[in-house]
Length: 397
Image 1: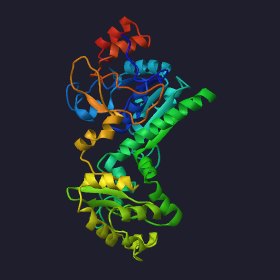
Image 2 (image 1 turned 90 degrees about the vertical axis):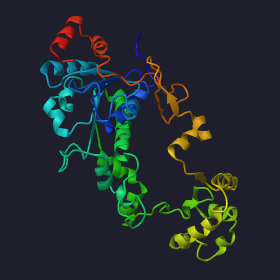
Image 3 (image 1 turned 180 degrees about the horizontal axis):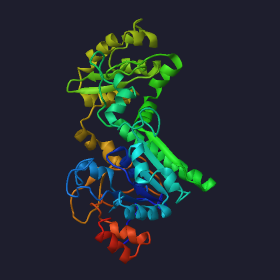
Image 4 (image 1 turned 90 degrees about the horizontal axis):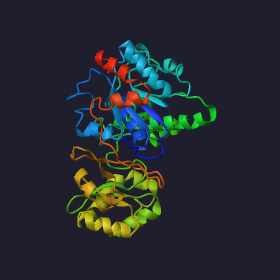
């Protein structure tokens, strides 16, 4: 039975996945979820039954990152294993790796070595700090990138010191940017007929994600500071207590601010000189927040969400993760999806946040077991039964 494709969108592409931990698997997950033929190449020395980078193979983290893929084992440190890998490369469209820059050169699987085999190959690399430069040999880690990339300096409440974000945002965005780069290179290949090397790093991704905060420095020489739950430029925007919890309220521009003041029952705030203009609201933001909260604490979160939305004021509840998945709109979107499996075990994961009308992404295959598809993949790439047997006996696969 042929391996199912998660979508027809990328089904014509074959991807060799050499990645580990999070940033690289995040990249390849995008390709797998849109139907690419992804082969995860695991080191033969990996502990098949337990701990590895990214946690246990049947743990939620690993399962989330590696759905819709097949897996094989291959010892790239053995000359015979390297020769097999190069046979796979000759027929592949994409290779993705997130080794430290010097490691792939030592293994003989760097871009130039593989490009000589397949000039159409698109080669995606994710590193901590870049493929060259003074820090290129340093190991990368998400929290290090969050700190060096400026994010921790603007996250958290004023005066409480730097604070990491609650998700590995540098890892995740580096993976997504690498996937975008790979797709761009594949589109360009349709014109030139040539592949190319796609590179990104955790540090670059994190700096890019600063977005307008980075632009404030580059254009205006203004260094952003921690603002807690307050939005740095749209005021009042932040977290406000209700009678039974908290609510987010966001205002942008004078019109929405006026509607907000009216809706909370404090129209006098609009004409108060301390809050009448955007600069005044920025200067007196703490006092303004306190005035608004005098009113929000009188009603429940549910009531305020209804009343403020009816008044045209952007707002929303602040959910714990379990509450979020029970929200009516989240359930309607269907982003939590079951993954089919022959073992009849519960696998429910977050699907793609993008929909395509003709070639949607689906959960079609559970994450693979260690080396599960080794022989199947080798046959597809043209190796004979005798060659496969020799590789098994030689402990190359």
